[in-house]
Amino acid sequence: MTVRNVSLESFENMEIIMRSISDPVWFIENVLEQPLWPAQREMIRNFYRHKYKRGAKPFKRCVLALGQRSGKTAMMSCIGLYEMFEICCIENPSKHYGLIKDQIIMIAVLSPSEDQTLRGVYGNMVNYVDNCPFLKDFMGWEASKKAIYSPSKKVRIEPFGSWAHTGRGTTAKAVIFDEMDYFEETTNRRGGQEVY
Image 1 (spheres, rainbow, N blue to C red):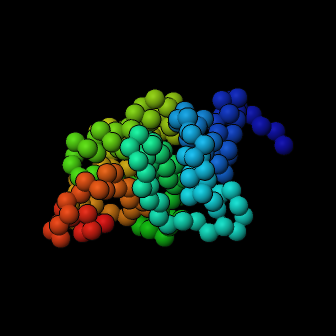
Image 2: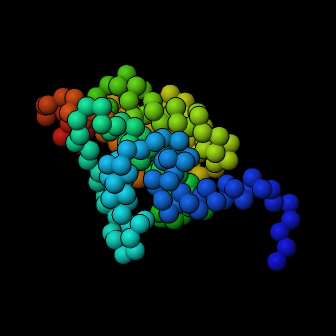
Image 3: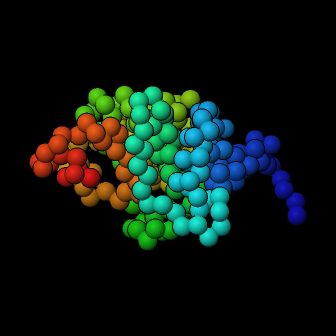
């Protein structure tokens, strides 16, 4: 087999992809350059247990009910970006999920207010992408206050306010609730239960 015109950088990027696909903790610590505490590593490995233990079923929900200054916002930002990364590693995501050709796949980030969204989980996500040459240059991700987007894969992370109809009609792989305890405690369309 002869390999021509393949740069060392291409091999390095393929190594990053292969390691990241099988190890979310490695992705967070080495691609996003976010140091994790041992307990955070354990929580992330447990949530993605199917990546570390053959035959383990993946979880469908991750609820972080932790104290202040425990790193919840940073962890959820990293998990959200990892979810997008996973989708972007699929050759044809819309075909893989049985969707209409080139249908946009969404990861929604909901917070009690737009300001909270831009300062919390979603704001961190934009910061990670802006400071990660691998995601911006090699993966081709674009980040702004309105969305983090992969034009080639038709995947986007988008911030939303806390209304029950927010994000209606989107095809979402994941929904991240930031500061769920601050959602209104009512049964109206801004209430936490209604939004969930």
